[in-house]
Image 1 (cartoon, rainbow, N blue to C red):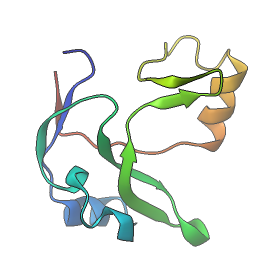
Image 2 (cartoon, rainbow, N blue to C red; image 1 turned 180 degrees about the horizontal axis):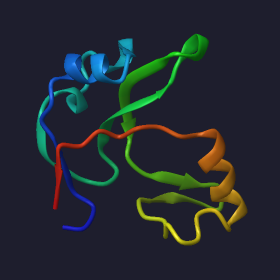
Image 3 (cartoon, rainbow, N blue to C red; image 1 turned 30 degrees about the horizontal axis):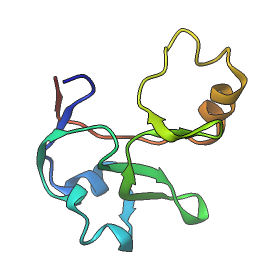
Image 4 (cartoon, one colour; image 1 turned 90 degrees about the horizontal axis):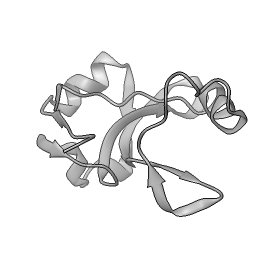
Length: 105
């Protein structure tokens, strides 16, 4: 079960911890309830840049869709090469976010 993790924290506590506003699209999302076997390509809770320089907590699909490989999102990138490859280097600088987790396996 490569790439599985757990998030059982309260969403309001996460929003307070990261000083984020809970997005309106996230209210009914299954990602917002405690889950103990979160798999790749499923919705996950994430903290991303929001409006006016703030932070937004919402549900995003886990995986990175590449332009040249849109059908199969990738979930792992080698840490050693992420800064060397132009595509990932740009993402590392401009499109960062936080994916909270309380456990993994």
